[in-house]
Image 1 (tube, rainbow, N blue to C red):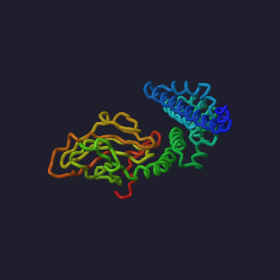
Image 2: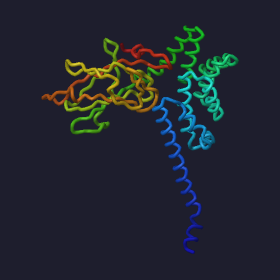
Image 3: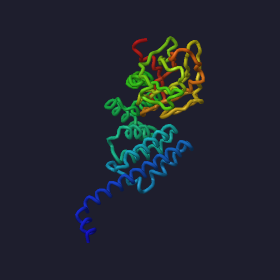
Image 4: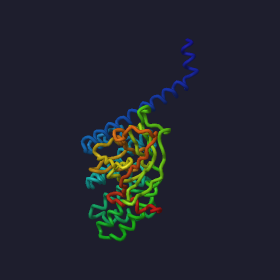
Amino acid sequence: MLAALFVSFHHDEVLKEFGKEWVADYARSMRQEVITAFAQKNKTNQTDPLTTLLEKPRWDEVLLDDRAYPQKRALLLRLCVALEKQRDYRALKKWSLKWLSLTGRDLDARAFWYEAIRHFPDEENEGLQGLITNQRAFPENNYLSQFLIKAYKETNNYGLANQLLQQAARPEAKTALTAWQIYWTTSSQKNFSQTLSKHLAPKFNHRDQLALVTHIPTDSVRLRIDPPHGSRIRIYQIEVQIDNQTIRFPISTLEFNHLRREEDSLIAHGIRDPYFHLPIGKYLEPADREEITVSVRFYVDVVVGEDQLPLVDFFEHR
């Protein structure tokens, strides 16, 4: 009887708490499904894991105001990026239309839709004009710009393509020219921490390499280089100078996070917390001094779709 009275008094609170737990479990399970699908896609380099998940009834029913919509949008974006890269415009048309049916206000969805229909004879002009109109209205959108640059090139409008490329690359370069961060670990400090790090303004040397020069302890073990959050850049030919010694680090030997390896380069693709590690410890010799000067150098290009421009071209203090 007392239990019944307790439940009756606290019925709403119990239901509310149960609802919170259910929503949290639902969000966790949906997020885990996305993580698994991404991992399978990366392993197989196929889009099937993404389409299979999106076609499941519970994912098909996820709408704009659903708790899982950000995960569904991430799935759709990853799928559309892959389909555009594969030039599978029929599938791209299908999935970008499904995306647009959820919200016509999403600029990325619009960009992929217009890029898809541009490759069908009866809709080619609509696709091109859609890219032109939307890119002019929203010049900050990366996909609208890169698809319109591509369209201009394919229609032999190279002057317009180059003009738009410079325009689109400028804000990307501005992001890449903000402070970079270097962390280090030592023989006594095994983990990277803010206390063992420095923010450095990028500078360029006479070889047009971006150079990050700083002092680190002589017992340092690893360096971690953090490009600016949100940057879209290509990094290659990485080397470190210590005193008169220059050490080159092949991309294939490096550990990295939120970067993509493409042959001899690391690509940052506009997300948070990209970084790569350099095993510096074996090149440091015991010395009487507590610190040593290191110069981390590499080439950087700004990436706009399929195009790349040297970051140094946008540096005002050359």
